[in-house]
Image (cartoon, rainbow, N blue to C red):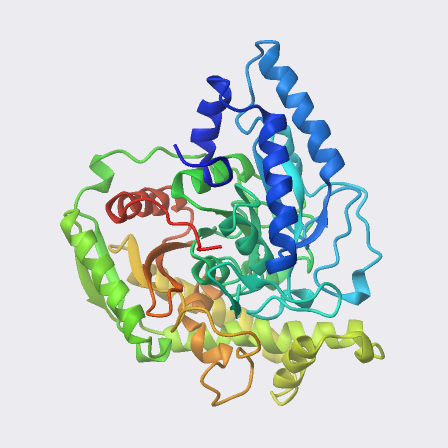
Length: 469
């Protein structure tokens, strides 16, 4: 078994059962780790040590009395600071929300706590989540555990850094264009972007509604696929606050269902040109899938260019217009990153009712086309982004810049337009020692198959490696 800060949920349950460690000791260890890591990497916005210790004592009583422990009894977790946790600040990286304290939990937070999880605190984001780097005027920047000169990614960068550095066993991020999958890739952990509505996004800021409910989702982040599956099972389920939520039951994937899957590798130049080390990691992963007796083949996705442009219409132009209305006159309080996002979308044509209605219809038609193309291809393998983590400040929205998000993050973005689930899994390393993740993609509501294939790859890859902190 690994050391306590890097143990899996299953290993920790076994340690509790064997009385090798207690919930009180485990939480104390993680709080000590946070105290060590916070000055180095700055993953956290808020830490609630007092509440965590009290809940740990409650969990310890459960074990001492011989009661049946809940699925996450005593497990230390974290959540992104754009999700409501009663009594905690929920700023979403903005000075404009620094005084917002929710009175009630988001449903998924209550589900985690009802399952026995102990929330340690919430984690840093870029302002209003609208960048692939975590930095803001309220709580500063979050650094990469593998090399603090590099970004931890965004918008769930604080969450990824906390989990990768052993401050937390897992947690919750959100994803509107790669915001779970990219930080997982930058920090070398796992992240699942589910089908919209599979996990309720109620209590998330910005709220998802109407056409925007397809774009943004919430999902689990952890160091192993098994831990992703455990968190996903507890967090999923319908909620009336999420218009897209549906009562989709958890399914078991049989060995027969995992035999000789057809796995496509998208060969679309509009996705961008990946670095040599990224392509090498993809080739090695494809070979592992072949060794597992799957059928791996190149696949050209039609209308992917249209999907990418439509994603930017919603994520860029339409959402930016809403933010411009709510932040008008408060520009002096906004972070440079967020102002750059607003500036990048200002040059686009104005969003009209007619253009918005047309984009909604086009989105449905493109999604239908992609679903039709994938009817016989249950899994896709791709990069997460064109490169590993970039240095602080390098990522941007400037056209023709080598680190322009619209060019480097396309592998992730089209899934948010189409509502497909995607999983980010560490499978390689760059010459600079930075993690390289691959992305597995499935059809809507097939997260269980996605997790099963990812676990096959994880077992073939070998144990997860911690960063050299």
